[in-house]
Length: 265
Length: 210
Image (cartoon, rainbow over all chains, first blue to last red; front, top):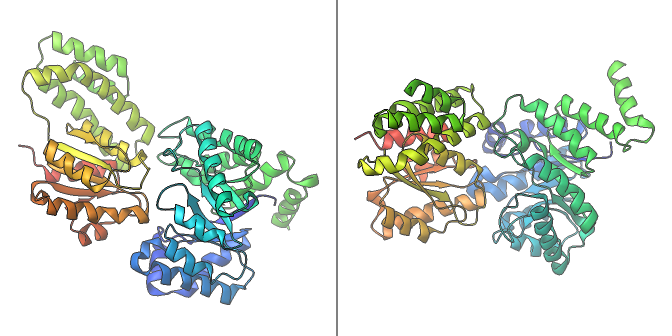
């Protein structure tokens, strides 16, 4: 599989995770972590924001539990908007961490400075310079400003993954195409990798899984390098392998064929 | 006629809704009857269907657009007749937060229920909320935040209202992905709603029909 998948399930906005954090239920956390890694996640997104005042402690606890039980090589994406929390948790990561996320929003700018002093890869939200972009061009403009701010701070653009901001097609039907076009523009004009959180696109619409996997195929075709999604959903991962095979991102379609044979055997 | 208008709003047929509103007015039906028995009645159904999962966001949007079209010709008549709205609501997304999709849906559904909504937009600082409460004297102030880092501005706004001596003049309600009922209780808000349809129910509960 060529696309880098960041498993989204260990997020405290999900009730099961919030409860596991509260109860310090390490088995629950590990089960979800393991399931995502086995399904092909290249990194695990960790979010403890709902713990409020205990966010730093809970995030660090998750990092520790996962590294101790599943190995120091597991890559983690630290999902917090708080510079203090990020700084504490970054220090605990043994494998190359991913900072999720920086932007040009006033509250997130300190995260740029903070990340500059580390080796971490960085997810960048192209927003905040002028607001929330709606079109592909506005996304590109915001991305350009963010890449510039990151480079000025000492984060090389090779470390960046720009989020193309997938938004609800149900609220604004133009958003689906705008994000896809932005992926092309950002790669061509800025030479930066892109990433996408798939499931936003289906908000407010029926049969969300169908929309998510259809859009996932389009994202792969648009060359998006990293996806933040639920790898334990077999339909999504099947679509990912199929889309890579169909767009020349899977040499001789071998990954696709192997997956098929494994399923059969 | 009013049934047809109600149906047009339910189906999101804006042109038809405008035309039927015009006809109803010409036929002598008074503006507030058209508003209550056709437009708001339709949006009530829209909200209930959404809550049940029988209606999806785009279907809600087109109905609201149809109502908006009808209101364009109805509003001057309502003003003329001195008809007051269901209540006034000031709302916005808090400081540092650029998210507006949820807030816009809430605005739309509140207007659909007959409330007058003053939407302050995104990244609204505490002071602007306070100034708007002073200026518009709303029954309800609504705040939205989509991030845990911006949600923390909600208590700042409540505090600013207290300092301005306005807290007991207005009900404060909250919404947004990271917000919970527990959080609303903790910071002393008057209510929390998980989505646009329940925001309408909450507003109706807080502002009983006079």
